[in-house]
Length: 258
Image (cartoon, rainbow, N blue to C red; front, side, top):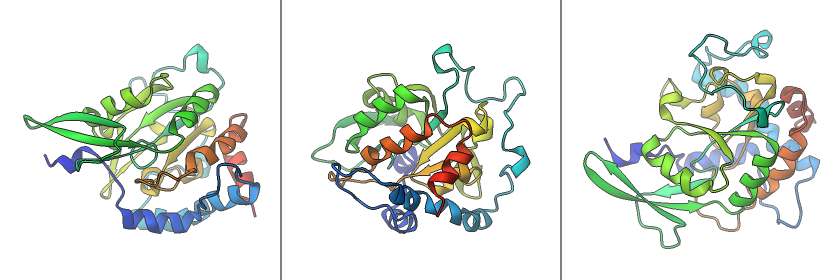
């Protein structure tokens, strides 16, 4: 197994295209996003039909199916909702290029260095935390049932999450084996979680990850090493507004409405 295959990452050129699509501006942390910026952030959702056609979205839910919950015993990826999270929206959060950036090449200012064994050889993975990730996760844990869902392998992602999530924000962790491999992409099928899709959101830098459920997505710009980035800080008021939603489709629709 190649070391690169341990970590699922978006290439920089892909990230550049995506960032142009979502029109995410890098605003000052002193100036939170206004509603006009919310609309720009969510504008790419209107273009997802193009992406669905390209990926052959045969597994996507039809309009009348979007309120269903997986009910067959043993098929749900998540355990029953705890008493603490009753009534809360479930937010699925990506790891690589959303919360952190990792590399097998040495990074001088790495926040973590995680040893990963690959075919009997231990490799060091250098991990950078995205600016404001601690503040973001702390607030998300106060508002939502948070689930880590990454297309990376657990042998890498689990120890990274141990170091990242000191407050225990993530109620569950899902890794590559929980994804659906669809036309060359690892897709996070939200219908398999066992949660009401009207009360489920996904935060991910890769549109390919949520092509089955684009209308549940909050897009975020891919991050690599820009220490002036304020995306996560700017997203806090977005999620604060979404936290009280009875139906995420309605609330997301209002945020991205012209």
